[in-house]
Length: 363
Image (spheres, rainbow, N blue to C red):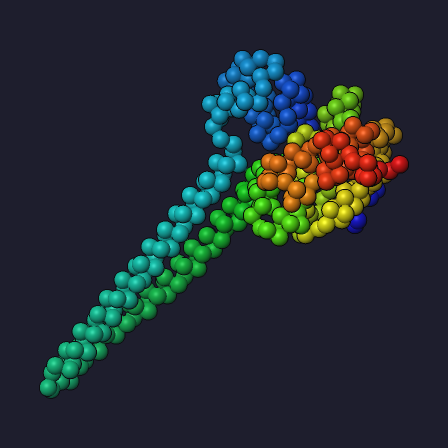
C-alpha cells in the first residue's frame, strides 16, 4: 500500500475505554497540558478512581499549572512512569536469571575440577606402585566408575537445567524488549513517542554519513484545535490516527516518524538529498489532503484536514537542538504562507524565504 489510501473515520477501531479516554484528554485540554504519554498516564490514574489523593493533588495545582509544576507533582505522587518501572523490573529479572546460570556453570566447573583431581590422584597412585593386585584394581575401577557416573549425571542435570534457564532468560528478554517498545511508542497513534524521537535525533549526529545526508521534517496538522473544539476529542483522536497511518505508510529503513506533541509529528530521514526529502514531504502532504475524513455511518465530513511541513538538512545545523529549531522555523514559514505547504530551511534568510525559493504546495 502506498502513502494514503481510502480510509475513513469509521474504519478505525474504537479506542479503549473511550469515555474515560475522552475525559482524560478533555481534562488535559482544560489544564492546557499537552496529551503526551506521561501526562495522560497521570490524569488517567486520577480519573479512574484508583488514586483519590492524586485527584486532590491535581486539583490543588489550579486550572493551568504549567508542565514543570505538573511534573513535580507527578514525580512526588507517583515517581517515575510505569514504563520505566516495568523495564527496571525486567532488567532485575534478567540479572537474577544470569546469576543463576553463572552459579550453575561455576558448580559444574567445580565438579569437573574435582573429577580431574581424582583422575590425577588415581593415576599417580597406580604409577607409584611396583605391583598392583587384582583386589586393588577392582577398588580403583569401582571408585572411578562411581565418580564417572556421578560426573555424567551432573553434566546431564546441568545440561537440562541450563536449557530451562536459557528458555526462561529468553522469555525475560522478550518481555524486556516488549516493555522497551511500549515505553517508546505513542499509545494513541502507534508511532514512536517523543522519547524515542529525541534519542533518534541524537543518532543523526553520531554517524557522519547520517549527518551529511540526514534531515528532519516537522509536520503539524493545520487548524486542529477548532476541529477538536467543534467535534470533540474522540474525533480528534481518530484524525490523529488516520494521519499517523499515512505517515506509517511512508516509513522505511531510512524514514522514521514520531508523534512529538499533540498534533505535531517529526520525521527523521537518512541517506537522502534535500530534493528527495522535500518530495517525500510533498507526497505525504498530498496523501493527507486527498484522504476523506468522513464518518461513513453519519456522513459527517470533518475535513479538510491538511499538514504543514518544515524541512532542514542535518548538515545545516550544529546539533539536534539546532536542527529542531531550524526545521520548526521552516514549518512556521509554511503556516505563515497559508498552510498546507512544504518549506525548506535552506531557502530561508532571517526567517523569510529568499526570492529564488518556490514553496511546494497543492496550488
